[in-house]
Image 1 (spheres, rainbow, N blue to C red):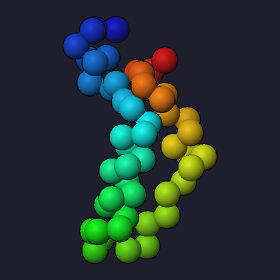
Image 2 (cartoon, one colour):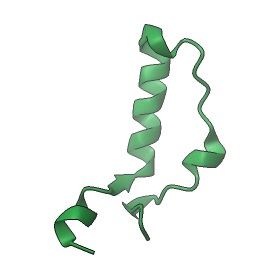
Image 3 (cartoon, rainbow, N blue to C red):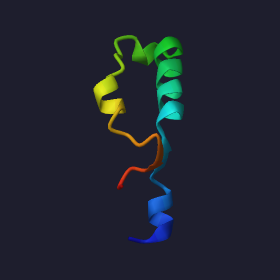
Length: 51
């Protein structure tokens, strides 16, 4: 797969969790949002989502 394309899918689970919690607490559109930790745990801690 193209390197440039793969770099776009590099994630840090802790950063995503922090942003989701921030949005859930502060955005009116996420009033009924519940963070699914089972789905979150499927993301890499610090890596590419394709791995």
